[in-house]
Length: 327
Image (tube, rainbow, N blue to C red):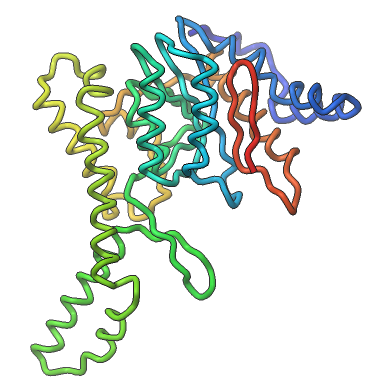
């Protein structure tokens, strides 16, 4: 990694991109889009040491930003384009989504990668996106990067508003209600209120069982993927049994709602290292980090300028040859 002379002041990247958009507005769409992204220039600069890079950027907050089965075709297309490679980098910015799809994306990436699979996080890789990062050999992070807890989220309707609630919260709420019910019965008090709450669909035993299974899936993913992947690279002198024990501790840590309280809680590079993840933290003035962050900012701006109120772009897939915008 090379450093940039701190005495040389640069124009802020966001301001630079917006200026370039203004200059390119008179050009054809293809030229204008390429002038915003500059992926044909930036990606080759990051593909060093016999590595290939693919990029997956979601516009957090847009209706279809979550990781879903719709992502498989674009991922397959990018991976087919680059073919079988020695080392593969995946840059990802995502709020998370379907954990089963995340597992499949990891398998797809590893099937196209002979040696080293690395995940680069320019901003956030939350929930199922964190699972993808945990399935890598190494995670590249910078000062703005964050992972998040991997406890599954359930979408429910609260007063007409869809909200994401931790699966663990439903389990704990039902246990608390059942404990309260027993206490009221012992004292001979009226149990109508608690029974009504237990009758809610979110307290249904089948729903709670599904919540428990989804939590176990997240733990199982970590315990199966990390001992012979990331932890083997980070702790080569440890035995498989020792690495498996570390993976179990990481799984418990990242699925504990009591530890971080809310699902969106930031887990930065320092804490990721403390947990035991294999983190390559780049300094803010590292030239590679500057290119990574520039590519991310350009992708965000590209999604924004190609969105309309009636048709919002939600994701962008990029490799060194082409890009695909998903709505």
